[in-house]
Image (tube, rainbow, N blue to C red; front, side, top):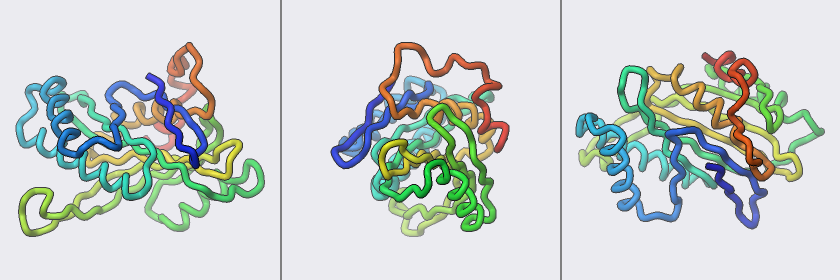
Length: 228
């Protein structure tokens, strides 16, 4: 389903989400949102262990709150079944940030160079997508997890893998940043085709009737080829 996300001060864009990516109501009460997550888990993964479900619920809400603090205008919960049957989870967020883009067409290459210098351990490149050329960076991060999340006094840390796409808006001095984050790093190769589909689903024009996903893999799988 195509989703339009826009604000008065944010230029419009549209999303077509892959299966397993569920848009979240950013204004919903957190308790209600976690209840709905639990219901989805019970329906989609009835055999998941209670600790697996609890971990997904807590990590999803914790990640969402972090994205909201950073100014996300769209967040999706990404819950899919891996090839081995395990439920795996990630968060897909979109930010629209005002930024001077420089000479036309120069932004992706310039930003890729800046990211490679700032994040020497990251995989950085430039990809061609239907919406235009974009800078792409994949890296692992260590993030703090407050002890209150688990009801214990000590805080811990969690290692996540993050893929960030940065694309200039075509008629506004803004950059659209699409960011995917997951703790299920061992399943990264299985995430990549879904992320390629999600990135291809970003559009600056209203969706047409035909599907965006009818192209053969060799025409859209640049992300997997670059970072798989």
